[in-house]
Length: 338
Image (tube, rainbow, N blue to C red; front, side, top):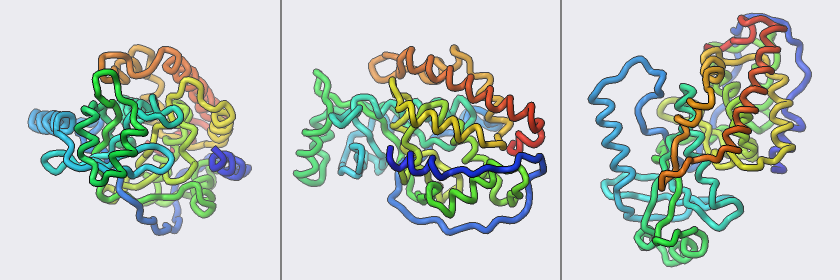
């Protein structure tokens, strides 16, 4: 939270809102390398127009393997949350966020699953694939490579009365590159892109600018207060796409109100949005939302009615902000991104 407050206090500056087309040249900065995390290893988003029976079958088969393969080795890799790197039979490697005794650790894993499912419903492929997975706790504990790791597992995980541990499982990203968008040099660049219509955006930077704009809206709608604490944005080295990683700060029953206020203040300054994403957001009524988010393990709804209602309220709020921007600048200037 302190990192978020520091970021939001300095992230934006007053910008002239004069409509113009995107274009120009902006220098890129090198990205830093960081430990790989989970990647979206499923089929393309539901908005894709190309698919085949063989692709669907392969995706289903891979998912079944992720959900059924036994753990071979495990170790803790988390810092502020309890996260495991697990190798499964067959060589699959995943990140696993189990229910834990850490603050809000009994529900934080749901944020990863819900963010992925919501992103898919909105036509986004930026959120790494996250699946609910249940392990027999004793079997997963035996997979730890050290006794210390096994002891920590026993102390931190929440095991149900049948000896199982639930959590979110995410396929591993081998080419994960951290991008510190909260740092001053990066912050100055993307705030200029998104808050000033007179700033030219070079063609190679348009995908990144569009993804950041969408991420700001996505995080407000999902009440993800933890995006800007550091290390929660990355690029997939294989595709160069921006990844919205570490979404376990989203979908809280009672998110920090000051964080939401500051997120909304950010959105009031943004003048450039994705036409396709906003259209998908408009169409997300309650029935579609419930269908998209679905169930947790055990057949219970993944998120409560309160969380869903609050999310729909924030969706309506951000759409009003965008509509006000359209009324002021026009659709062409507002929908700078496809």
